[in-house]
Structures are given as structure tokens and as C-alpha cells.
Amino acid sequence: MRIKKILRKSVALRRVFIAGADWFRTTFGERSNTLFIALFIGVIAACGVALMHIIVETLSSFGSSLEHYSGSPLLKTCALILFFFLPLIGLFASHCVQHKWGGRNYAKSLSPLILMLHRRKFTIPGSEMLTHLLSSAFSVGCGGSAGLEAPSVLTGSAIGSNTAGFLHTDRKQRLLLIGCGAAAAISACFSSPIGGVLFAVEVLMPSFSVGALVPILMSSAVATVVSRVMSNHFGFNLAITVPWKTNAVPFYFICGLVCALIGVYVIRSAYKLGGIIKSRLRNHWVRLFTGGTMLCLLLALFPILRGQGYIYIEQLFAGNLSALAALSPLPPGIMPDWLTLTILIGAAVFFKVVGSVLTVDSGGDGGIFAPSMFIGAFTGFAFARLINLTGIIQLQEPNFIVVGMCGVFTAVMRAPLTGIFLIAEVTGGYTLLVPLMIVSAVAWFAARHLEPNSIYRKALAENNLLNDDRDQVMLQSLPVRLNIDRNYYPLAPDDTLSTLRKLVEENKAEVYPVLDEHSHLVGVIRTDRMLHAMLDHSVYDFMLIYDMMETPHGLLSPDDDLAWAMANFDRYNAKHLPVCAPGGKFEGFISREDIFSKYRRLVQEADNY
View 1 (cartoon, rainbow, N blue to C red):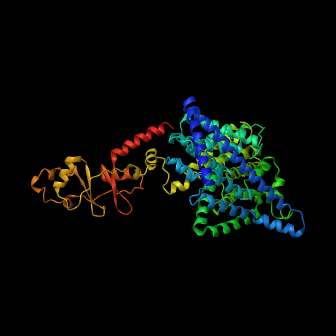
View 2: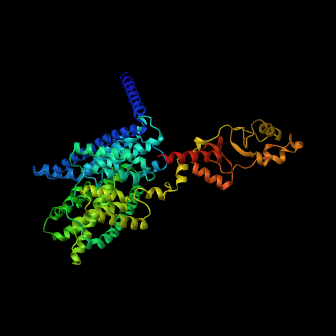
View 3: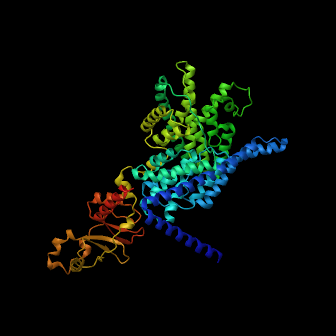
């Protein structure tokens, strides 16, 4: 009874919200209503991101207290052992959240979201408003080597989708509100409203219209405000005060090439290593404990790989190299500081992606967003330091740390505008705008030449799930089952030509199915090919349908999409194709003319987004 009362109250509350939204839409117009909903999504998404970071900071503080515990030797040993296995504990907690609330199709990457939006499917389960938040917070907060941005985007997108569903908005609005949630999430993570908008547009909504920018800007801006009110600082801040030098411009071009190479290494390493883990360790519990243990060992050897890594970027930017050298697990004095620092920088550039893959594919949750920026920062520093050691020129190392972040991010994500403006906003100004543009453009061009797909699109493209052809995308978004004409007139194999003549006179259909006693399709009669026989009245009563029917070609399943249907229409030069269920039962016909009509409507809808 209590559950029924709660359900009744929730239904009543939903009706109140819908009535209020309808009144607001009627009073102030559709665009004003969309802006108001975008503002609401921005607030909720920012609160979700803030909660995620609070959990991460709490768990990170707990881990730090274990690492620096100063009690009795026995308790200190126990604390260090617990600290060593803390990443595995975080993966276990994350794995439990995923299996408890996430379901079998739980997504740990933006790839499924990109594919869903690519196919014009805008419904995201409501559970994803919470599961990504908790799952990634446990993984990263306990030391997992991953970022929080991708889970934040998935959380924000789920908030946008479910808000649209709650208010019964049409399909045209759902994509826009999903973009609002994604932009708000990135904006809340970095206090970067422009970066959030550009990320949503470049990565999730490449076929946007200019009119869609206003609600996304509103959502992103309000998310920045809310995140700053809830906490002054979640991510990191690099203040560039020294202008760049013109004599360093050629080296910015070279740095862009280096960033492209590192970005391609990140994409291919993540793709290959993730495939090895999934193929060799098929049991999810074996994968969890094996991969988690390997992650614990890697983080013990290189503590610089722990967590998101933003704190180490700040130390590198500030020139606090001694603090970084102290992260070596070896006691001081065993090797020179320069060698220790070189090993740590090499680990940061080449092993961060290994730690990220182990974190995510072993059972945890997280993204490659923060790791790509982390790798880029150390790549830019290493490049500038090597050039400075040659004595050719003295480069400004902080500037190259910043542009390195932008370059590797662009090469990995294929989002050059996002990289430029996100880093510009993080650094507190546009002092390095020109070098950022140079490095981002070079990295994008070179990386695209070496690896055509971004890290999110590579698996989709190689499995033929993603197609940039607009026609194919639109047709792939619709299943055959929604376009079946079930008003057919069946014939039996032992019917005569006179039966067919009566059917043609009564309904004038162009095609008739020939079915057996189990409603299975055995043949097809096309009237345009039967005119000669139908003019011969002498054969009406003894010529059987079985003798005149054609073998059905291009047989479709209800689960096929219209792109596959159109391919069969072209292959068999047909106007109608039969559709049969997996068991063989005939469902109806699908018409080429109907598909063209559906396509025209889709084009009109897409042009209005």
C-alpha cells in the first residue's frame, strides 16, 4: 500500500511538472521553454559533477592518510598494505555498482553514446544519472588511473535525456537537451563554459544547427556558476602570465607533430590492450582481480600515475620537479635526480594509458579525457626540456606544458576547438591562443593522417557501426518492423490463376505473397509480370499459382534497418521486398516508395535540429 501511495504521488507530481511546462511553453513560447529546461539541466548536471568530485576527494584523502600513517609499526604496515590494495577495492566497489544498477549494457565510454546519437536514438536509462557518478568516483577516488570527465558527460547526457522524457518533449528537443547535459558536465569539471559547448558540438553533435547553441550555452554557463558556488576548485588552474615568443613558433609546429605521434600511440595502445584484456580474461571476476592486482603493482612502482593526475600537472607547471622526483618508490640517493625524473616522465607519457585501460577494462569506470591531458603536459615538458638541453634555443617550458596538453588532447579526441578553448580557459586567459591554435591544428592534421578515427570512434568504425554518410545514418536509425505493410492478400500454392484475377480486380495490389499452411513464404506473385498469362482466359482454371510464382529475393527480417533494405532494393531492382520473422512466418512487404517518403521526412527533421 505504501508503494502504491508513493507511485500515485510521483505520477501526480509528474502531471504538475508537465502542466507547468505546457503553461510556460504556451505563455512564453517554445524557445523560452527550451532555455528554461536547459538552465534546469545545467544546475542538476553541475550538482551531480560536484557530488562526484566530493566523493573522489574524500576517498583520496582517506588514501593519503593511509599512505602517511604514523602510528605503531604494525598498524603502519597494515595501513600501507591497505593503501596498496586500495585501487583494487575501488574497482570492486565500482564493479558492484555497475552490476547492481547498470545492467548488462553498461557503457564505460562515450562510444555507445556517440553511436546512439549517430543513429538518432535519444533515450538513455534513468539509472545512468547515478551509476556513472558512483562507479567512477569509487574507481578514481581509490587511486584508479582514469579521468572523471567521460562519466560526467554520460551522467549529464542521462540527465538531459530523462528530463526530456519526463516532460514529454519531442524528438527534436531530446538531442538538444542531451547536448545541454554533456556541455554542462564538462563546464562544471573545468569551469570552462565555452569548452563545454564546443565539446558537445564537436564530439557528440557534429551535425548541429546554429540555433542549438543558445540552450547549450545557457546550460554550460549556469553549470559553471553552480560548480564555483559549490566548490572553488575541482580540477586545476594554470595561470599563464608570460607571453609567448615569436622565435619559438617553429618549435610549436614540431611539438604539434610530437603530440600527434603520442596521441596515436594512446589510441592504438588503449584499443589493443583493452582487446587483450577482454579476450584473455573472459570471466569478469577473474578480469577484475587480475587486472586490479596489475594496476596496484603499476601504481606502486609509479605513484605519479595515481588518480586523475591534475595535481602533478600543477607541480610540473610550477617547476616543482623535486616533488615529482620524490614520487619514485626507490629511496633517495640510489640514482641521480635527473635519471629519476626522466624515468618518471617516461612512465607518465607511456604508462598512463596502460593504467587507464587497466582501471576501466578490469572492472572500474573512468575516461581517457584527463589521462590525455596528463600525457600531453609531460610530453610538452619533455619536448621543451630536450630542446633547451641542446642549447639551440631556450623555450618557455610552462608554455609547452600547456600546448602539449592541447596537442595530445586534440590528437586523441579529434576535437581541436575544444582543446584550444578549454586550455585557454583553464589557463585563465588567451595569452597562448596562437600557439594553441598552431599545435592543435598540426596535431589534428597529423594524427588524422596516421589514425583516421578518434579514440571514441575507432572501435565503432572498425566494427562497421559508424558511418559518416548522412543517408546511411538516417536509414540505419529506423528498423524494418516500423515500415512493414501488413495489409497483404495471401495466395496458396494450389490456387489457380482465376483466384489471382479476382484478387487483382478487388484490390489492385502490385505484389502478392504465396504462403503454405504455416504462413511461411514460399513464393511471390508480381502482377506486372503476370499480364500476359492473365489475358489468356483458357488457362484460368488449371494454371496453378505454384507454377507462376517467383522465388522471393532480398528477404528481410523485422530487426534489419532501412539501410540494409535499400541495399536489397538496389541489388534485386525490386519495388517491394518480403519481410519474415526469424521463425520464417511471413510478416508483410516493405515498399521502396514508402522508404523514400520516410527519408524525406527524416531530412526535414534533421534540418530543423
